[in-house]
Amino acid sequence: MRIQIVTTGLFVLAACGGGSSNDTPPPPPPSGFASIGEVQGTGPTSPLEGRTVRVRGVVTGDFQENDADRRRNLGGFYIAGAPDGSDESSDGVFVFDGNNPSTDVDVGDSVDVEGTVTEYFGETQINASFVRVAGTSAVEATAVSLPVARSITNSDGNLIADLERFEGMLVEFPATLTVTRLRHLERFGELTLSQGGRLYQFTNGSAPDVAGYDAHKELNARRSIVLDDGLRNQNPDEVHYLDAGGSPGYSIRLGDTIDGLTGNLRFSRGAGGDGDETWRLMPTVDPVFDSANPRPGAPPVGGTIRVGGFNLLNYFTTLDTGADACGPRGNEGCRGADSNTELTRQRDKA
Image (tube, rainbow, N blue to C red; front, side):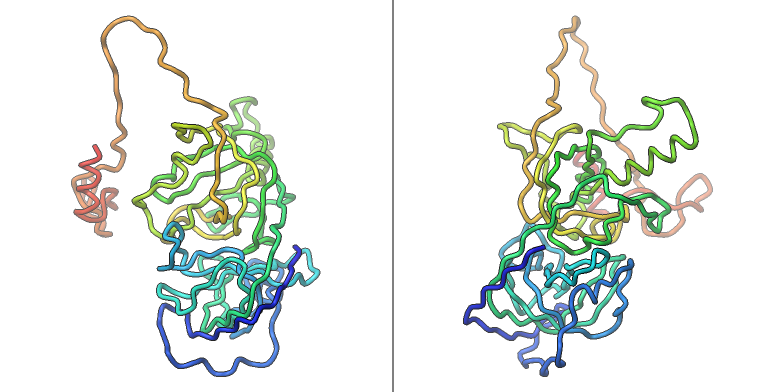
């Protein structure tokens, strides 16, 4: 990563973090700065977890809450620091500054941050107590090629790509990636991309074989990355990427492709802490997909009968209150809507 710092005359000190506002300037920060590489460490958790640190970096991704950009709201921003020379530690980190940050940052701002190092759903973060904006800078995205060299097993027991080295960094996937999963697009605003074309079941092209299946799953993990919408809420009013194509009337489909995907790399579950635990790209440049798998036209058929179908999976009249009150004996978990509002939304959609 190359960082070019251009100092300007701007110097702002503001209290922020945790969603609270404070008109009193924070106390003088401790002498010395920790590098972001020291905060990240070389493992999945920070060696400085629970400690107060002061770091200096450049804003590479603006995902603050309640600012001008309503399409992204992770409650903070990503910064990049000067490289520490290690290939095992990341040079980027997420700064959490709450729902109503006192300092509105922009990409390219050079900032000093003080806060507590935390681990949030597996992502190393700095919970900011203050942010100091001190100029403007430029950061070049780091190229990441899939498949990566290694895979790891997440807490659910599933294989995922080992991208710990790049956590929090501004990265670019220069190669062509293919849309291979759309299951959680409407709920979590995410889709799965893969290198080398779509992912298929092992037995689509091979006879059943235990060793071959294990190798197949491991390679698929190293080929994959989740593209997130940069939002914390589930079932968003605006579903990103449905029409994010370069051609008129575009509608995303499995098999479509994208080049030069750029954003900050995050380790987390889906919106609100649900969903799959994996690496997610939070885009800093709006993705534009190519229609590599256009929908075929209607085939010529005779007759006048039309057949339609609609998936009513998890449409139940019993609300899911968290109690085991469903099933034939009334002692099983419920799978319906969590509230009357959600039930009404499901019914109206159907």
